[in-house]
Amino acid sequence: MHAKDRSLLSDLEVFVAIVRHGSMTGAAVELGVSTSALSHRMRKLEAALGAQLLNRTSRALSPTEAGAELAAQLGTGFATIEDALRRLTRSEGLPVGRLRLNMLRDAASHLVKPILKSYATAYPDMHLDLHADDRIVDMVAGGFDAGIRYGDRVPRDMIGVALSPPTRWVVVATPELINRVGAPQGPADLEHLPCIEMKLGDDSTFVWELGNGAAMQRITVSGPIRANGTSVILDAAREGLGFAYVLDLAARDLIASGELQVILPDWASEGPPLMIYYPSRRQRPQGLMELIEMIRQHQGLPPLLGGAWDND
Image (tube, rainbow, N blue to C red; front, side, top):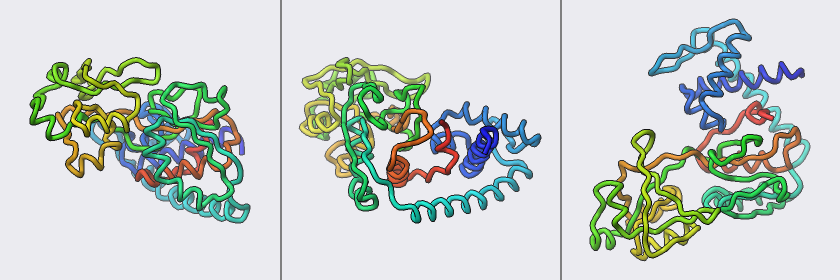
């Protein structure tokens, strides 16, 4: 297949994803790329085909009549291709080898740990070498096959795939602490209340970002504890030592049990998804695709179509 044909096939799969979600945003999250990149690819595809495939307004996006017919035909074709690939994988055997991953501690706890047993059972000849580290590392120089970081931290020369929906960050505290010092009425109040400081991988202290877009407020907090691990921060919060700014995914069970309460819910902040990234090359390491698909399924994300792997 010529490079031009591969590019067209990949753009067609992106088109199908956009139609399936009914939005550029949903497709962008699934494919781990920006909405502007998808818009560019759709304009290029429509120019190549000489037909308008999508109706775009400021409020909605829908396929044209020709686009809807094309999407239906492509959906059937891609399903046939996926089935053929699954049969080929079964006939040729399961992946074999070693996969070295460098990842954030939060990614290790909340993305990789939940699927480890399933992965080991499904792929018994794969050996996972996992390294959890919140510092920014040179993945290639360190000998790693892939890394997991927040989307805005993925190096531009790497291929990135979303492993989670967009992340959500919240402020939490124990009911006892709230009764003792009072609940903040706005982000600025946190500057005068005991908070658990978050140490980043470069040893700097994170400035809390509350809210989204133009309304976002950046708050410098202080308190009796500074820590660089979510588990330590949550333990300190559970002891009532201060308000904590944490990943909603990490605190979900404690919030559900009532041990911690979300403070200023209207000021929760949305962040980029956690993404896995790897060097742009034709041969991906054995077992990487299977790991990515398993994590995405556990996080409630749809499976990736073949073309989404061909961004190299």
